Length: 356
Image (cartoon, rainbow, N blue to C red; front, side):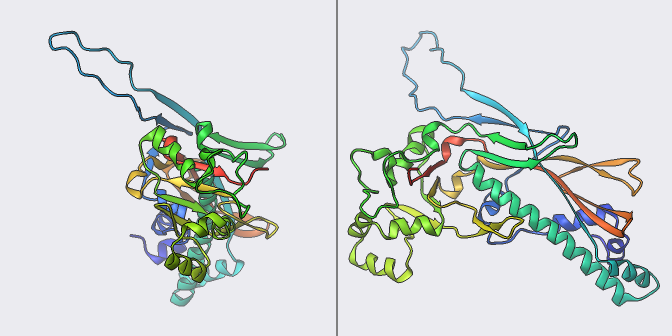
């Protein structure tokens, strides 16, 4: 436990402790999914994991007394990728420096104000990190993460961060013919394209992993495709129809829970985007069978003092401050190496249900 005085003194251990006490916003559904399934990887700046795919083959009975039937080893695939490297900073308000000075002279009110200001800025950096991870989690559940990082220190333009999670072709991509945005689309029973129907998309999970899809995630635009679909409306019982129109949202369809996730992220220009884009549906197994969705965390370096002549190795987030003379300001830094990973990609299916 750290005291107010230690925060005001800007001790790195105290600041890092503070960020580790902060939870994540309840409206970040993806982060809540993996928050308690962290796996720490020490001694490397590379995220490593193993893809395990379930077998659908049967064993066989043998004649007693005969040699054991030799089978091939279970197929596993070792994967490695760069961690998502998060490195942020924010300058403390100039008045903060005055509060620190006056607080050290016995002004407890100024000390408390300084402490609250520190917490607010750390929380701000943590919120930026959480929003980025939320975006990355929903991208990973569609098979890959791809982001433009700008230019590197050598001036090379358009450096990218790309990770492919090795989804089978049947577990990602877009519908080629069945358009869910059309009111007359046979979303439930198209005999010519059964693999693109509501049930058919989920069948790939059963076939490849043995897990039954129970939950489907989408945004409100996609949910309205279901709500306005003629076949879905005919399928619903009269009491169900009343519920659909009263809530203006489909919540359950063909033995699957329909989750409408409307949370959004904002770019530097102030434009907002859904974490799950329009027309995307993501099928998942029951919560008890999602242990293969993990958050890999790595070590990072944190300077021991403002002169940066020595450093600590920190697992997870690292927070510290540095003084800059021009302009005179105290800057808070946040660093972390992290990557959300579906280690069994057969347990998730995503699809863009509107052909382009």
